[in-house]
Amino acid sequence: MESSNSATDVLFILLGAIMVLAMHGGFAFLEVGTVRKKNQVNALVKILCDFSISTIAYFFVGYAVAYGTDFLVGANTLSQNGGYGLVKFFFLLTFAAAIPAIISGGIAERARFYPQLFASAVIVGVVYPFFEGIIWNGNFGFQDWLQDSYGAPMRDFAGSVVVHAMGGWIALAAVLLLGSRKGRYQKNGGVASHPPSSIPFLALGAWMLTVGWFGFNVMSAQTVDGISGLVAINSLMAMVGGTLAALVVGRNDPGFVHNGPLAGLVAVCAGSDIMHPLGALVTGLIAGALFVSLFTATQNRWKIDDVLGVWPLHGLCGAWGGIAAGIFGLESLGGMGGVSFVSQLIGTVAGILVALVGGFVVYGAIKAMVGIRLSEEEEYMGADLAIHKVSASPDNESSW
Image (tube, rainbow, N blue to C red; front, top):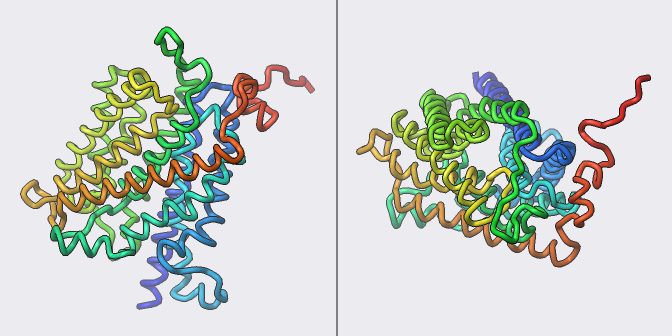
């Protein structure tokens, strides 16, 4: 019976890892559909290569930083309990690798390729697992201090703050250091329009992310015994809340509509295991409206050239999710309790600070040493031809 339970848990978390791995295809196509055609190939290559370098960094460094466990032992030891420890690594790796995938959308169309790969390795190897270990493994006594001081540790069931807010705020630092795309903001105060190159690809990416998100959230239980239908329904309610809010606030804009469910899902991650479905719906509604409003402000009022809006989508909606868990997780609002609003607020702010400091240090150092931006000529040509020497849709094709 024990062997059967172990095998079931291995299969359970492996399926979760595969579903979240598929989400990386969603990140890729969301970026492909949003950037201009001359940068579509680069978007596809970046996501795959970022995932690969993230795997190496997390395997050799990051997982040990977060959990104090390495894999430099014999295969007999690694395969104990059916290899559960290995598939758990795979599952958590897909979360870690989401950080560079998030950043990729913010710095699209003007970032150098290899410096970004190096940044991904450092972020996934050091910056992200440092905070991951604090929240999910109790490192440095931070969670114990919150428990003793405010009655509960910081709760982040599936990573609203640990994954999404971290990725979004690191991306903000990278975007600010990189600067806006050439010609995006004009001297007379005007903003050049760069509409999505392919709404179908954008929609495909959003759907891939949305479907995979149910593995992201539900399978964060990590064992079959811990699975909860509440997590699934709360994810569903937040998803539709974000969609409908983005539809209304975004005035039917398809780009906003397809990012709306992602905003809701980002926000519900933290408290999806303790909220009432109505609380999850409200969380998603607020997240969808927040994304549309702040994406518009970011691009037009503050002139921050965050191409896919990853800071408002992941950074701000992720922070809202961390705080929302401390509101709608309370028993007085229909939640399951065991959560403290103050702990959620402090934990969320801590995540933002770690992300900003880490982002500015990593990208600032790379900028100073080798540079992080394409030349003006390369940017005009497009990253596809400048970096990969091929375009997504060649103008002249041989008839043979």
